[in-house]
Structures are given as C-alpha cells and as structure tokens.
Length: 152
Length: 152
Image (cartoon, rainbow over all chains, first blue to last red; front, side, top):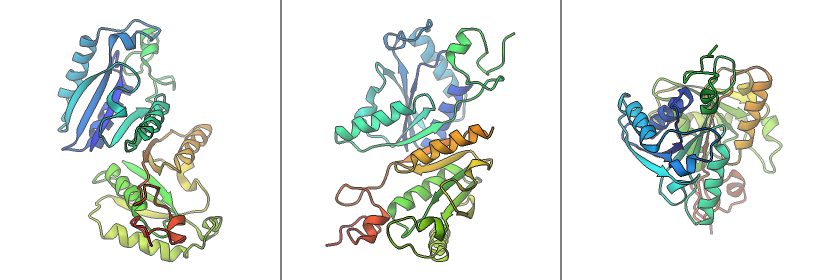
C-alpha cells in the first residue's frame, strides 16, 4: 500500500514516532511511505522557532534508518497543508487527532478534482506523563521532553 | 493489534469485504478482530427487510473462513451503535465514510468514561459501476448486485 504522512517533526517526539511507525506498518513490507516535511517557510507560521529543514530531515532519516522498516520511502517538501496529496495516486493518509480535518479536506478536494478518495488512518495522540498530549509546543516551552516526561 | 468493526452485513457486498479484509490486515498475523453484528431488533430500524441474525452470521463466518486470515476473531451481537466499544480494551476501530461519526462519538464517550481513546481507520466506500457507493439499500432496491454491477 502507498501511504502518505506529513509534519514538521521538530523535535521528533514519541507522538511522531507512533505516527511514522504506524505509517510503515500500514504500508506493509513491500509498500511505500511518502513523508511530507514542512518547508521552513510553511513551518514559520508556528508560534515558536523551528530548526532548519535539513536538520529536521536528518533527524527523520536517522529515525527511519534505525528501524527495521522494509517499505520504500521518500521525503517530500511540504509547502502547504496538502503537498502532493491532492493529485498523487496513493491509498491511505495517516494523521493524528489534530490533523484529521486536513485529511478530510484532502478527500473533499481530491473529489472535486476527479481523483479517487483515499483511506484515512487517524492515530490517537500519545499522552505525556500528565495525561495531556505530547506536542512540539509543550517540548519547546520546556514542560516535557520528547518522551512526554515532565521537566521539573 | 486488537481491532473492532461492526455492521449489519446484509447482504455481504464488496464494500463490507473491503472493510473486513482491512480489519484483519490491520490486526496483523497474531492480532484479534472483534466483529460486531447488529441484532435483529437493532437492524430493524433500517428501511428495508433484513435477514435474521443467524443467516447473516453464517455468511460472515463463511467469508472469514474462506480467506487466509490468521488473526483470532470473534462475532459479538451489536444491540446499539456502540456495543462493547465503549468499555473494551482495544487498539483501533475500522469504519466506512458513513460510520466515521460513530467512531468519533465512541472516542468521546470513552474519554468521558476515563477509557483510552482508540485509533480510527476509515476506509473509502467501494464504488459501483456507476460511480456511486455500493450499499445494501441499493442492492435491496435491485439497482446493483453485491459487486456493484448495474442490474438492467
């Protein structure tokens, strides 16, 4: 199966790792995963500072190559919310609870363009020690580390 | 992974087969699939006649046993939209485009009960020859067969 997933991945935390692992699992042994990585310009809309694209890409590649994923994969720059997901031929998109609306919008726009809709796999956000979501913003604020442990 | 999926499955059409196959795929070789099958009373809210529970169950069992699924599976009666999905410990629910709102409601109710939310896998409905969804209602009306072929 050909699967798409996207994000800024800065820093790569347990929620991202869950999203990426599930994407490869869903793609299957001989499948394909297209990883959309936000460009610096698109990521700059975030409220906190973001590391440069190449640094984020390197961390993503290190994570993937350290796992035993067998599916083919490719990293694409994501210059907006949709990237190539509106026109590419693929089977499923993997999203978090936060980004489910984007996946639904992608299917709506694909339909308008006469493209086949894709399956949507929404994973539940990984919780930090305090029961709230792990997020880059919380890590950036110094509340938690990438594994969701509280920083006292 | 432990996966839940539900339906009336009357008759079992290509859309159902896609839903069931994906559920077993997602569960994985050693996983578990809980199949909720609507009771006759709950299914009676449909606008057309429904075959008895035991007949629908037999067709479901025949389909599953004719495939090479290795995951463990069980059929549970579904007396309402939720069945055991509000309280059971499981990982993911598989739904169609039509039943995505039910899965989202299940997560909302689980959260209210202090249960862990589950991942949601939404498959795109299978299309009939005319580009519209395959549905039991259309089959019952005599418009299409279980594979979505138009009946002239």
